[in-house]
Length: 568
Image (cartoon, rainbow, N blue to C red; front, top):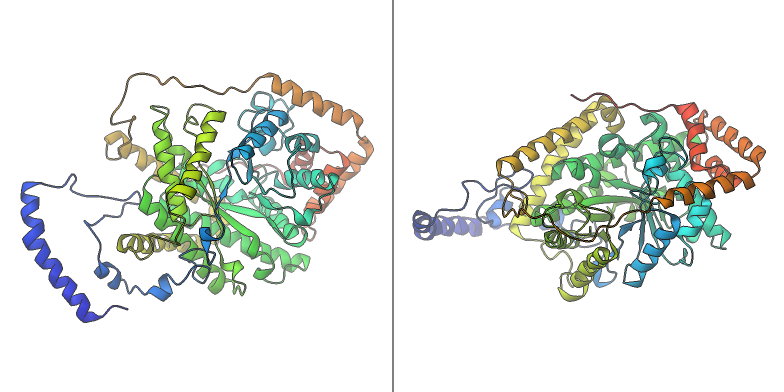
């Protein structure tokens, strides 16, 4: 790509510039730091030229190509935001179904274009709200949803066939999706028209988020059976959101976020193909890969985050094409949702978080995200208020309609620094993936505790840098203000718990108990049989009146519970 004579001329001019321009200036005005580093730890040069890419054998067609074409570095769609803007999808849900329904309607009224459901911890961990361990967590960090009754209230007067819904649910993903499907069908909406995503990524729960129930092997069966079922029954539904966001929130470096996410994706693909050999379908990766989706974080280090998204997209295309023999273009696309970095929000000077999240959102857009959640400025202190979420949506709307960043595709493509960073992150991520492969894949790595330990080490090292002042955070270790901020704080009404529990009791009283028992027995039977897909019997149990907690309890009886290995 590069003419050797032209490169020699650049080298000559660079040496001349350093001698005649740079050195005299440095004698009078030294630079702010001896070393400038990215969050990954790469040393940053003063500036970048074609020399930095030429020495890496950089070639436009192999490294970049064109939007909507392999290797998808410049974006997964040929026209990107010129044809279809990213989906504004704010993560929301708290308290009771009524409160969540009200918040969803509010978000849609001010311009949100897709829903994203947050569930409380009992729902995520397979416990009904009247369980002793659930009592104090009902409705706190998401909505309580033990039965289809709650799901029906959550989506009251919301057109389920016209809005896409993303669900942050993993260990109980089948139960929750079953409720969603049954509510839609009760309104005359067939499952095949429903659009959205169920997170269903249990590997990242073992590594970073810890909302798992069963041991890795049955958990992987549970997740991959849902991928297979959705590929057949819900063609518009993303059956998994392979999530790097939680790795970043736990302390992962950008390269670790890429590598652990893609290694999880590799593991899911292998498991689905192996399950297909047992069940007779899928026959190839192209039968299900087009509906695999991803989820990443966007931090404040703008250019490194843009490079991270571009590197991940290029790597996944290579993995699907060369490792798994994907033929369909869509099978090679890394389509992803982005959420701004919650871990970088500060309780100190919370309004400054608006600046942080705006920069993070810009990184996601410049990096080619398909949907975006912007954290609210008050989330380091409480669940977001209506005013705070409105500003988060306005951030996205200003980026889309006022800045011009969505008018051309991959506007930073070809920038010497960004391309160098993209290559560097890709190289580091491949090294981590290679180690995981040598361990036998991500399930084996999870069982050993290695990914958790690596992220914990990175988090510790980062915190030391903050405490030493090497990483500067406004309001935390620089420009500190002594006063405690005074802002409106949202609090969940304790009465929510009783409302949900009372509805649950009424639900149990009205159902056919014998029918429920038969359905739960069938769940236990199929859980013991590897050759059967678990989704249909769980959906039938929900249809028969079994609660989320009862279904999870039946699976616990067969599969047991997981206790993570000690990592230190």
